[in-house]
Image (cartoon, rainbow, N blue to C red; front, side):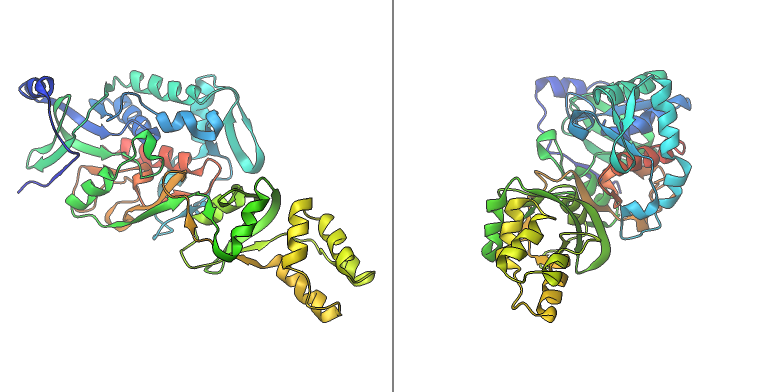
Length: 409
């Protein structure tokens, strides 16, 4: 019995005419022309495989083009497995070891793409993210990959002879099928649950997808924080439920919290947990109060030496010591390094940079991304339950998982 997954299919007259043409045979069909799909198609094509790359949209690589403020943070030189979240923290190790940031840099340099390193090992194009997309398209052309855009209404079926894919652009047959359809983040770019639906149709489990690298919302008693919108400061952000923390900038917004520190910890945050903020990592804020005057004016002066003025004034009101004894000041100091904030939620997939969760890695082979129970079926990139930290790690996972599958199909 065949297994079927599909987008809604409502063929018009033109589509029905296409569906009457004979199916086209390929060695590999890749679904999704994002970062992972383009890379996988190029690698497979250059191995001599006949590859069809199907994209629901009219253009490939749309998420590449908006990443990194339009300059594409295409990898991170400090890439290591600890920078990734997954129900199986060991799953990504093999692919990441086989295709490293140095490998992708070789490709960048071969194509003459100028780039630079920003903070924390993040590598960006000097000019435009189009350079990375052009690189991938050139590699696909080298592998004679056939691009099929506007492939709406995709249906996938498997029988004894392989995979059959029907869509608005016709019918395609192949021995191998690679699913690179991404997650649910940034729906305006066409994100859907198709990859998850397809996985379930083939009997694979899916770890509940959730927004990651996403701003957090504040409300209730903490709604007053939003009056500080625009304030940014270096913090250490963590959660009560994990030992992981990030020393980066926090930004207060009109709706709650953002900035790199918050985006990073959002991937670990769970509803109901507080986010714990250290407002002066590795610094003692109230030393001057201990050693000098002990009053509200001295407190505000000490806070202003370490925090932006508006934030210092806010903390002077909500974090003032219960008294001016040594014990009370010690408690106030500790509180400034362990201040709990209680998000009411996230800004959702609309603002999330990536999707956490996805196709359960227990059903995939780590070296090839192939489904254990369905030889010839592969899942790569964001659709898989592997999510990187902010700073180029998710692109590196896209490249590494794509190469792993591209060499195996």
